[in-house]
Length: 397
Image (cartoon, rainbow, N blue to C red; front, side, top):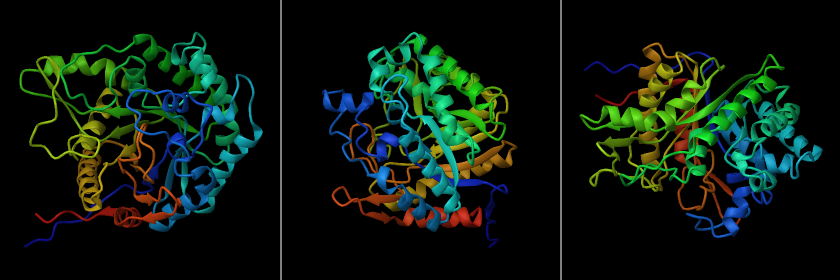
C-alpha cells in the first residue's frame, strides 16, 4: 500500500495561537463588558474577574507557545486601559503592550496585534458605542496612540475583530449559530460605522510602511439545503459578505471559522439532532475552515488570507486534535488550489473567559482557576510539532 504523502505548507507560514485582552488579562474594569458582567447582562453566567491573570503572566504564556513550537502569537490591546477617559492616555499601559511585543521577539514569535477585540471603553459605551456620532473618528485617534505599540517590530495588525459579530451584538441578534428560524435584522448604521472605523484606522497605520493591516471576519459557512440558495445569499450578505467586500484592497483579511450555519426556506436551521456538538452547542464541523477561506478569497477578489481563529470548545483534547487536523486538511486543499494563505492561528492559546462563562474550554493550554498554573495540553504539543515541521501528516486512507 502506498503511504500518503505529508501535506507541506508554504515557506514562512505563520503558526500560532490567539488570545483577546478581556478574556485573559483580568480586571478590565473600565470597559463595557465589565459593566455587562456586573449589571445582569444577557447570557452572563459569571464575571471575568481575574481571568487568566495574563496581564501579569504574559511572558509565561508567550514562552510556553514558543516552547511548543509556534512562531506567532496574536493578542489584542485593551482600549479602556490605554484610554480610560476620553483623551486621557496612559503611558504606562502603552509601555505594557510594548513589553508584550518585546517578549514575542525575545521568544521568537511574530506578534499579530488586534487593536479592538469586542470591548469598548465605558465612556464610549455611554455615548452609544459604535452608534456614537464620532465613533469612527475616536477609533482613528486610538489607532494613532496605538502606533506607539505597533510602529516597531509588528508586521501584522488587525484593526477590528469580527465586525460582523459586533454588528449582530449591537443589533440584538445572537452571536452564535442560531438555533431557531428567527430572522433578526442587523442595524446597518453599526455596520457602516465599523467600515468607516476600519478604513480610518488603516489610513493611520499606512504611515508605517512595514505594517500590513486588515480586519478579521467571522466565517459562518452558510450551508443552504437544496432550494434555499437565494435565501442563504440574502441572509448571509449583511452578516458576512458586506464586511468581506469592505476588505477588498486590504493587505490581508482574517478568517475565523468554527462551524457552519445551515439555511432553510425560512432562514437559519437548528443543528441536526444527530450531530456531534461542542461545548458551545455548535456542530462539530472541521470543513468550516476550508469553506470560509474559499469564500473569503472569492468575495474579497483575492486578498491574502490569514486564519486568525479556528478551534473547538471541548473537554476531550483528542477531539481537539482530530478537529484541527480536519480543518488543516481543508486549509491545505485551499492552498493547493491557489489561494494565498499566510498562516494559521488557533483559538485559543489558553482556556479563558468566553464572554459570559469559563465553562467552554478552547485552549491549547489549561489554566487552573485558583492558582493560574498553566498546563500544556497534548493538542498544543501536537500542533506545535506540525508548526515546527511545517507539514501535516495525512490520515490513513
